[in-house]
Length: 292
Length: 292
Image 1 (cartoon, chains in turn yellow, purple):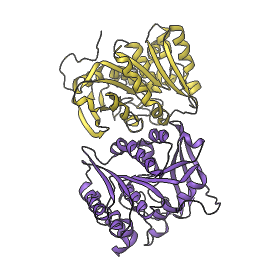
Image 2 (spheres, helix red, strand yellow; image 1 turned 45 degrees about the horizontal axis):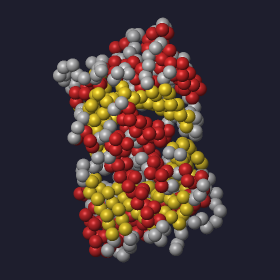
Image 3 (cartoon, helix red, strand yellow; image 1 turned 120 degrees about the horizontal axis):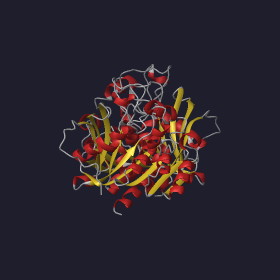
């Protein structure tokens, strides 16, 4: 089995600890490092459960949505109680490159910093920094494997909205690395949804064929597979019809034979009140798949 | 038994709903109303558990610390999971009056808006608005009893830091109303602690005898009683020695025969990472006392 996240050589990640807080018997840390992939300093959060003092622990990656940093889910996601019980490391990356030298579109929350869409931009000037696919699939996993007591043979990935898109596309492209994948209200068809099409064009250019590698539905249509997906979707989510399109994911999974457990949650919206409600259930389901 | 929080007459509270979010099967709401006590608009949060759709539910009041609004614990306190399981309404008031017409001391986080100390100021100009003791002990309970499916015969109170001070002083003065009381890192001796003495002088004047009614240790020394208190205190809390002084609360309780369960929690600080870790345990202990 491929374990892409093992470091190939000893590297100096120049990682700084920003803060450390005891929580549920473990440690919630915030760290920063110089990213060679994104050509800027990047910040991320890692929760180490109590069990990590004794042995390497499985890793669950949480990818956040538009406008978020590492901090939103760290403060509002309510993942630490379950992670401590289950012995899971939870890694929460930022959602895009940031800094004075990073091109941005201030005032546009659907593009630029906070809207990296977990893709590698190919169009100048964004191709220098907006390389979040490589960042979350290569550079940050190498750092985590090197710097934390992480069992990189047992990894899961989940996320919310843009981060749900990130989680499913990552799992589809790395089924050998991720044993489990789930999502809260993922952007299932970002190449079509109104809030992501303009971003894809600016990051990737007008050749829509190049967009398909960053679209869950398109990846499935193009033959990528993952054994099982859990998706919770708020039925009162204002972005349901255009932005999220869970029915298109359902159709793609049905045609591909992918087991999709799509749960429409009555009354729930798109916020962290929705995410936190179902956080524990998601975290419990990831380790169930780690030993299969 | 006195049930001070029952409304004496039908009143128009002019309450507005600011937001409503489904969470853990219940509803997290934020509301605003014109406060006759504080002479300004006040905002507060109420979590209604799923059980509140069927019957009146017990109420647990959470009083927040310096610099907080209703929102800090609502976002970071992680109380809804346990409240939903236990069928508890959780009410989270603001920590002081706010608005353009409210005298404040901008830049001073230990006085003014966000630092009401749950007392009724007697010194101009603060005596017009800074009446948080009357607000949380009279006006807001009347509103809650009138507008929500609340079982006001079963109430508990808890809080953090300045709000732990508020919770314990409120319980000591209303043992007939509150059946349970607990605190995270309460300011046990605010008349002496460096961060509250200057505020008490500006709110209440130089006669320190008048301060004692808003000091947990002094109230106990002066004969006020509550059967049982639970206090969690982070052992790594930077405010431990001067600001919080749990050992003085311990001494006062010992001398008065009050059962104090003071738990020093190794490694924990003063933040919501500490509060959220022990939130569930506190919420479980409150209803254990409701039916005694």
